[in-house]
Length: 162
Image (cartoon, rainbow, N blue to C red; front, top):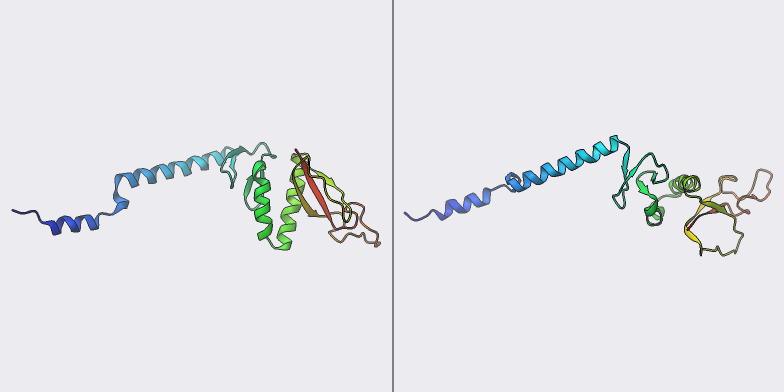
C-alpha cells in the first residue's frame, strides 16, 4: 500500500512548536532564571538596567536609583540619553537627585564658573550642569542680590574627578 502523503503533510502543519521538548526546556530555564533574579533581589542584589551587572544594595554608591537602576559606570551614557528625553521639570528633579548622589558617594564637587568661563575637563570623569538649589535656578536671592553659589547663572556644574 502506498504511503498516504496527504496525511503526513497535514501532521507537519498541525505540529505546534510550543509543544516541542526544546521549547519546554527553554521555557523552564527562562522561568528558573527569573526566579533566581527574584531571589537575588530578596537578598539585596540589584541589577543595572544598562549593563545588566548585579550589585549589592549594601553599597549605596554602586547603583543610582531613579526610574531605572543604573550603576556608576553606566551613568555618563545613561544620563546623556535620558536627559534629552525628559521634560524640564522631570530633568531638573532627576538631575538634582543625581547631583546629590554623585556628591555623596563619588566625591563630586560643585564647581563655580562665571559667564563665559570654559570649564577644565582634563581631570574629569563625568560632569553635569544642574539647577542651583540655593536660589532655585533664578540666579538671585530674595533681596535681588546675585546668588553666590552659582555666580548668578542659576546653574552649577557638578564634576566627578577621575
